[in-house]
View 1 (cartoon, rainbow, N blue to C red):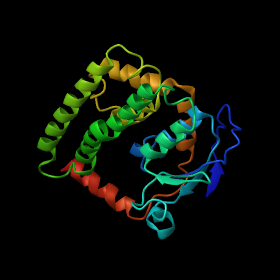
View 2: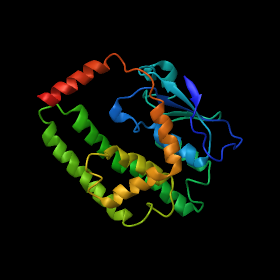
View 3: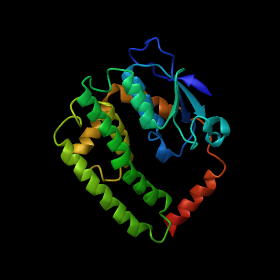
Length: 247
């Protein structure tokens, strides 16, 4: 199913073809608001570009038609009539390079903003994913508690470095950029774990990102789009997780 984004971004009408992105029509509650079509939606909203969302029922992302666009069977994908892309960071960079709102005009500032995009994807996100896998998907394993302690300490070390670099600045490097967009989306995954809250500067940084009108215009339609049904195997997985918590 495809439909335009529910909230039309301000400043649309660029004359460019309306991009089409893919998103899931269902994910577990804990993943809602975190699926990686969010930074793409946010970038499009910041750029003022209307877009269409093609919703994928769970399971269809593994079918050949989607794998032709995304070889790993994930979301999002992006098509705008000229290019078809996958990987949220690459898509955000493509959008940022087509507008003057997400990258500085000067070459040095532009390069530094792109560096922060890579930092979010390569220096911060792997540690957060490691935390999520250990705390949620591996929680029933006999070694999970000990491993989680190591994972948390690794994350704390990297978050301390990031907080020190941010200091009391509003954004990572001058004005808000695609680097901040990607970093805020990455850090949001730790909400409620206490790890971000250990660094008030980072917590405030994430809150500033979430307070941007374009972020809300991106988040609300994503949350409203989860109207599908879980795959048949989800109930069995959920029961297994519950048994692990009770063990």
